[in-house]
Image (cartoon, rainbow, N blue to C red; front, side, top):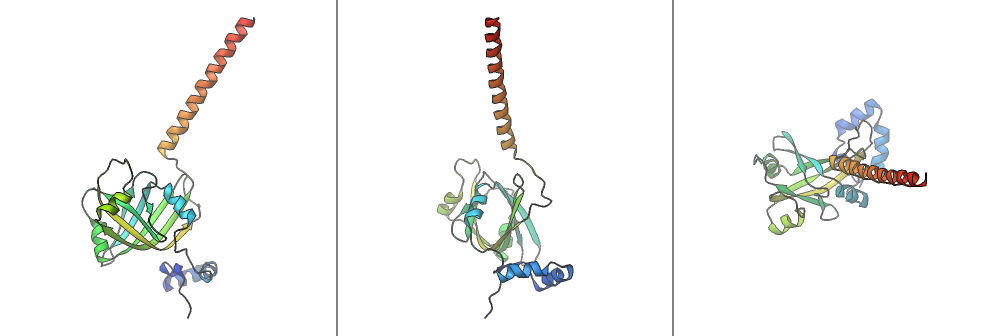
Amino acid sequence: MMSIPSSDIAFTPTIKAIQAARGSRDAYAKLEARGGFRTSISEDLAAFLEGVDTAYLATANAAGQPYAQHRGGPKGFIRVLGPKLIGWADYVGNRQYISTGNLAENDKAFLFLMDYAQRRRIKLWGRARISDDPALIARVMPAGYRAQAERALLFEVDAWDKNCPQHIPQKIDAADVAAALAHRDLRIAELEAELATLKTSLREIS
């Protein structure tokens, strides 16, 4: 019995027909022959998650109406909890509970992660659920982060893939820019001090 490639989570028969019509089917057929997208959290994905401070979670209700919501926190707020499981603290917000309601009707979810500085993006397909377990909430809550965790969100990874950097604008995080400018200003001050010392020495010689 032929196994179904994991990339079929995204590549439906209709999508495969479009790929064939537009000339990209052969390349993706080779991917499928190797099993498709990756299905477990690898070391490189775990390392990527350690640097993530923003994410977009997409869900849909029972009628198929989609909804995308931003989730953020300090770098590494998305925690690896198992070979196929990630999770994060869901903070108190505007209390619309659209994602929560969608997941109660339809647990299929999609997570989109972007690293603008390194021009990388990761796509994850899976199933998500909400947990009110205090121990789990404490486990995924970032230490020292000033937010109130209302619940935890668990995301079971079915498949994931990364995109090429084409068309991703490079943007640098404000904190990284501030650190670079502070380092530059410190170096300028050091050089100015060295120059002043050198000028003093030259005057004494003359």
